[in-house]
Image (tube, rainbow, N blue to C red; front, side, top):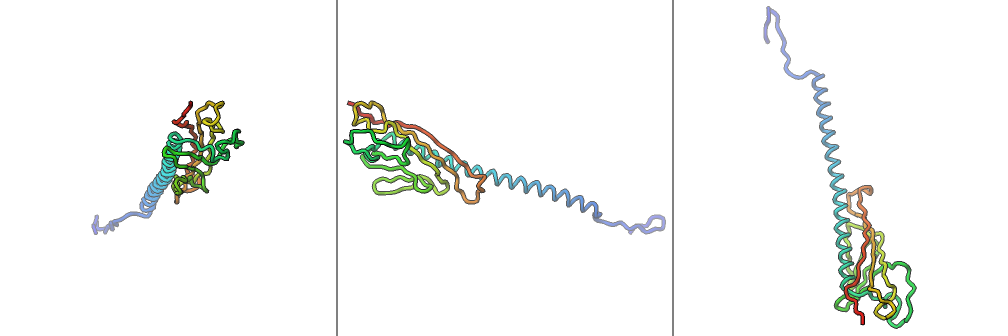
Length: 195
């Protein structure tokens, strides 16, 4: 204690209640801002992960279908018209599976089973998409609808257009943060033997 002109002075060390309340208010504001930024970063990361997952699966699936289709032949006979049917089969404008004969003569079937695109080849059934995406649509448009190698009047190289829709299916991602992509492409087969 100090004395000034015969009076004792009490010097209190510490903060006043007003200073403490102001400090707590500034601290609470700073923590709230930091938590808000952190939560926004987590949401952006989840959305980015969902987009990357859909893009990777879409790229792989599209490239696989194109590669198999370009290097093989469309198996027209497996769509319901035997090799000697002599007429153009009545198909819908699209089919839900692509049937091919690959370069080594094996039959292949690419189709949608539930929410997974699958490849049936040589007695094996293999998924082409992962469990982290779901496929809601897979369509193939084959032109011409009859084997041009059997009918001389049809002189058109076979081509196939396809489209599919993928949606991310990652756990922990809210439905509004899921990514969706619709992919469409067309390919022609490389092998086109004409007399």
